[in-house]
Picture 1 (cartoon, rainbow, N blue to C red):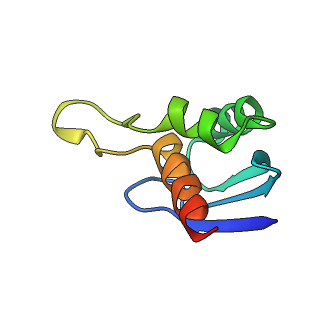
Picture 2 (tube, rainbow, N blue to C red; picture 1 turned 135 degrees about the horizontal axis):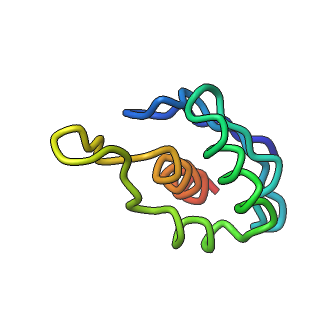
Length: 87
């Protein structure tokens, strides 16, 4: 099933992904750091929802006073958590 999540506090504005039998596939980010987000998409593809959440939850972007308190990877984990709660 295809899911879309509007991010908050990151350069990426949206994340799209599929979840079938608790496995995440077809991950894509709109905007953001192209190379990093391609890597996240490829590395997370085929992992279970819980594996992705465990690895990505709490990762932040920026340093010092410019720390955003979240990141695209963290937003992906949040998207997956919210999707789990709906189901």
